[in-house]
Structure formats: structure tokens, C-alpha cells
Length: 148
Image 1 (cartoon, helix red, strand yellow):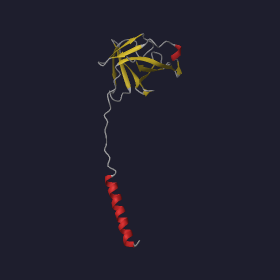
Image 2: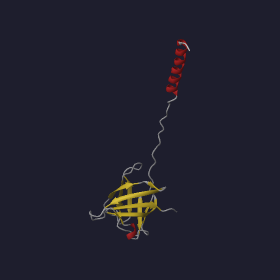
Image 3: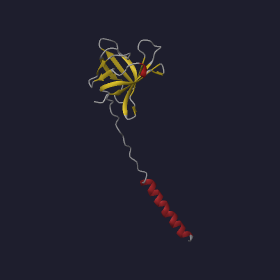
Image 4: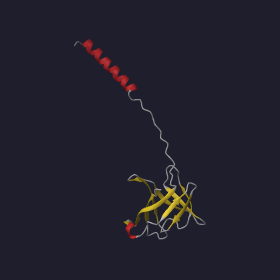
């Protein structure tokens, strides 16, 4: 192979690489809109941790239910130590990226709590952290939507 042939081959390879670099790396930005978090429905407690200790099996949480409606209201059945003790209204601090949930019991002052909305084992959960009255006791409730 002579030097002229070698330069032609190198030139062709260079052009191919240039074209691949120019057209081969085309990428589209795909923006996916975040959906509004929908917590409407009936929820039950699946786990309760008090001061870092799992107490789920030490009390009967099976009868407690909280019902969130699409119009921003909530009702509770078989009330336990919870963020609030009366029915009322609720609001997320941000409908798409919520970090706090505000409960406003009927005729009472609003109470805000941390809010997590993870998916675990294929099911959507709500996790609240709160202290009902006594600051020495911190509860972490994990709730799961009741399937119809």
C-alpha cells in the first residue's frame, strides 16, 4: 500500500467519523409532565412506628380508615392517635411534588405534617410523621389505599 492510498483511506475514514459524529448523536429532549398526586380514596394503616419502634402488632390498627375525597375533604373511621382527631379538609403543599400535607379539622386550627408518597412492593403508600400532643412521642404511619 503506497502513501497516497493510505491518505485516501484515512480521509474516507475521517469523513465517515465526522458524519457519524454529526448525525449519529442526534438526541431529542423528551419532557414528561409530572402528574398531579391523587390521594383520593380509602386508606388504612399498614405500619406504625413510635419513637423508632415498630408497634404495628401491639395495637389494633385494622379498623382505622381515612377517606380523602377529590374535593379536598377527609373523614375518619375508628380514630386512633393521628395527626388530627376530627374530620375536615386537606391540601397538599404542591399538587405535583408534595412534601407536606395540611389537615384542617372542622372548626379547628390547621395542622401540617410531612408527606411521602412512595411505591413499595407495587402499591402506592402514604407516609406521615407527626407528634400528637406530646413532643416526646413521634409517630410514623404508613398507609395503603384500600382496594375496592
